[in-house]
Structure formats: C-alpha cells, structure tokens
Image 1: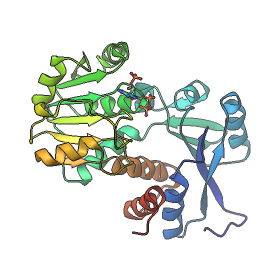
Image 2 (image 1 turned 180 degrees about the vertical axis):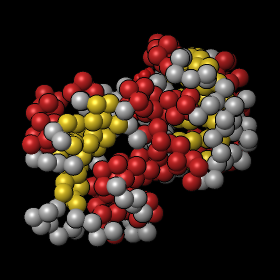
Image 3 (image 1 turned 90 degrees about the horizontal axis):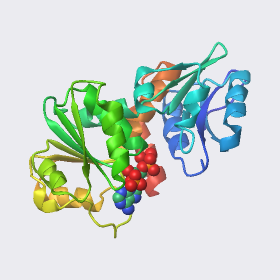
Image 4 (image 1 turned 120 degrees about the vertical axis):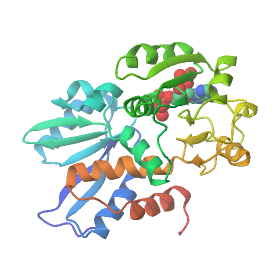
Length: 289
Ligand code: ATR
C-alpha cells in the first residue's frame, strides 16, 4: 500500500455497484511498483448523485477517475470537454480533472487494439470482422475497428434494432461498411465464414453452461476469435475456436490496456502492464501467480 502523505494524489473509479471492480488492485500494483505518490480508490456513486460527485472531485482536487456501470453514458452530459473517441462511442470511461474542468475520454477502443497487437496479431486492415452484441462494449470495439480501416464490420445482436441503430450511428465515421444482421440468420453464418476477426462483446460465455451464439461449423481456422469476457479465462467460444485451430484472444488484455492508457493520461508515466496483468489475474481468479 502506498504510504499516504500530504502530497499523495488521488485517482479512482466510480460505479454503482463498485465493490466488484478489480481496477484498484490493478492500478495500485502499478503505482506501488513505480513508487509513485498516488492512490487509486473505489467510489460508490449512485445515479442521482453523479453531478455532485463530479463537483466534489473538482473541489477535492482529485486527479482523475475511471467510470463504470451505470455512469459511462450518463456522465457525458456533465463533461466540460469530450474526446473524439468518447463522442463516437457515446460513453466515457476515463475522466481527467484539471483547472476546475472535467474532460472525458474513452480508452476501451485503444485498449482493445493494443491487446491485439501485444499478442502479435495484426489488425485486419482492409478485411472484415463480425461483432456479436450491440451494447456499450460493442460500440467501443466497432469504433476501434472502423477507425482502423477494415472494409466491413457485420454486427449481430439478439435485439436486432440495436444493431441497426449502430449501423445508422457509425456508418459515416470512416470508409468502413457497417452492416446489421440477425443473430439467428444465415447472413451471420456467411459473414463468419469469411471473417478475418470474430469478436464477442456480449456477456454470453460467463457461465460454463452458456450456449454458443454462433454455429461453429462456419468458423474457419484462419479467423481470429477475440472474446471480451474475461471470466472464465477460457469461455466456451474460445474453447471451440482453439479446437478449430483459430488464433484466440481473451478479455484480460483489453481490461489491462484500457487501464494502462488511463493511468498514462492521469500520471504521465507508462505503467508496467505485466504488473497490472498479474495483479488483475490474482484479483479475478484468486490465486497466486
Ligand atoms: P456492455 O456495456 O458490457 O456491452 P450491455 O450494454 O448491457 O453491456 O450489452 C450487453 C450485450 O450482451 C447486448 O448486446 C445484449 O443483447 P441485447 O441488446 O439483446 O440485450 C447481449 N446479451 C446479453 N445476454 C445475452 C444473451 N443471453 N443472448 C444474446 N445476447 C445477449
């Protein structure tokens, strides 16, 4: 634990609930390793008290906070400045307080991409991706891929109108074609068969007994399968993909990198991502690594 003194600066995370967040372990491990005079604290902020909390952070000279459920979207209307990516994603996961102002950023899209390149996997520029889900995480993934120069992104969601809304909202952010299809359609099967990348952004896979959202017969060994879910470390989708010979990526990397980018924005120092990853895995999987 950091030795708190008169100069210790505060960063943290706001959410409701927030007790489940493993960000404090991840960030404090990196702070401790670099012997920095900072501490990362969880703040339980209820929906009706978001505005007061933001004002309070300004008054208390807090340096920055991460934002988690349910505030990522609603916080946008309270911000003084919003980054381009946060605007496109429609959500902020990182706030920075400076000179009485609060600016919002979103590090999920960059975190998603960095986790891929760290594994030595090229972003399929000029290729195609299938994204399962159309919630907050999906939006960060689609923005990341659309800004990376993919030709086609196919979005499939249980509630189809949300995927269609994505298609409308994100159609003009780049040259990438964005197409919404039904989760149970043959169009999805065909898109998966020719995809360079398949990303699951839904919560399906968190339970060992969860059924696959896709028909694995259409999955090619050449398709990279990226799972946003990080508990369990190997979901049923990742297992099937591995058995098919696909390159796979789990959700831990994105979680670590979105945190590392936020850390860098607040503190101006690149944290040791391995330290963050080990602390996160210990916290999530409750075992010494
Ligand atoms: P997050 O911010 O993590 O993306 P979210 O915005 O609540 O969370 O989105 C959850 C996503 O998982 C949605 O795309 C949701 O589909 P719906 O829009 O139809 O609700 C998807 N999802 C959750 N449970 C699902 C299930 N059992 N089958 C298929 N999709 C599911």
